[in-house]
Every structure is written in structure tokens, then in C-alpha cells.
Length: 247
Image (cartoon, rainbow, N blue to C red; front, side, top):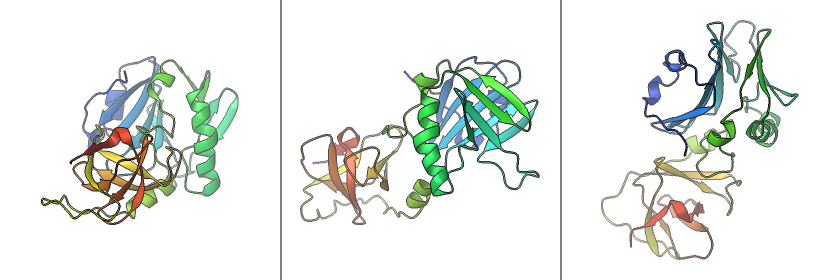
């Protein structure tokens, strides 16, 4: 069971030094108002946090604290010298892996770095000439594959796609069912939102995001992925476990 601690989303990063002041010695996770955090602390003033904000979509990022200084990926281009943080996983180096602002960068994050991190036996992080080794104990227990329905770690292109979606306010009266979609539904998801996909697969592109209490349309279908339609006319697929029929 994933460990979830309720802390204020807006304070997650600002309270990071306080949160990590006590050593964990293994990976743990927090969920707070739409943000998922994955954290490890070695007890020697070195800690690593992976943050995946979902409530207000932003790309996934990582912060390492060592010697009282914070280093981040994607690197802060406003920081003098543009210090880059690198992960070395089982001997393979990934430079600034949370930078997904280009197609090659996104492919590296999605198809190389994240799968390697999920299977890591040895994990080192380099920044500003320093190297810190972090345990991988508990990492596989808390970290989800990117194609898992519950995974909240987004890339730049996914954030851009979601930012261009508009959501109608919750309708008090029952809307007219569009042709072919015979059932009214809402999501059933503890995260407060569910992604709509372009195909019947969690690996396919996110085409829209449906939030809690937002009504949408579907119909009785076979299989685990159902076709759904938003009130704005966007059509995609949603896993059946996230659908609650109102009829």
C-alpha cells in the first residue's frame, strides 16, 4: 500500500527542507491536493524529491538537496552557470532527465530514464561536481510506470495539451445525451481527475482530462476501455474502473 500523507500542495516544495530533515533511508511517497511526491533521505543531509503535480498540471521535476543547497531537474535556466543535475542508474548517465521540453528530451524521459529508474539497483545523482548515492530500497514499491492510470507524472507536451482543454462547469440539470452515447456518467477516481486517452491504452496520448463531478457521456461496451464524450464534444477512451454511471 502506497504511503500517503496529507500535506498542503502549495507548501510541498517550500517545506521540502523541513520534510526531509528526518532520514527515511528508503523511498516513500506523499499525495497532497493533486501533487504526488516521491522522497528519499540518507540521513547525512542528502535528500531527493520527485514531484508530479496533477491538480494544476505541470511537468514532473526532481530536487536534490545536498550541503544545504538545492539542485533541480529540469535545470533552472535563471541560475548562474545553469547547474545541471545528472542521474546515473546502473552505470548509465541521464543528464537533466526531467527536461522534457523537446521531442528527444521527452522520449529520453519516457522510454529510457523512467523505465531505468523503475528497475534501478544503483542510483547516483551528480550536481555541481558532487556525487550522492541514494538507496533504491522501496523505490519500486512507490513509483508507478508512466502508463499506469494512477501515474501523475507529466511531460511538457502533456501539460500543454491539458492546458488547452476547457471544462464546462458542472451542470445542475441533466444534459441531453448526444447520439450514440446513451449513458450519463462521472468519474470515480480518488485523485479527483481522470485522463481521457486517444486509444484503448494507458500508453496512448492524453486528449482531455475529466475532473470530479464533471458529467460526460458513454455507452455500454465490452472490454476495460470505454469510449466517452465530454460535454464539449471531445471523444476519447477511459478505463472502466474510473467510470461511474448516473443512470
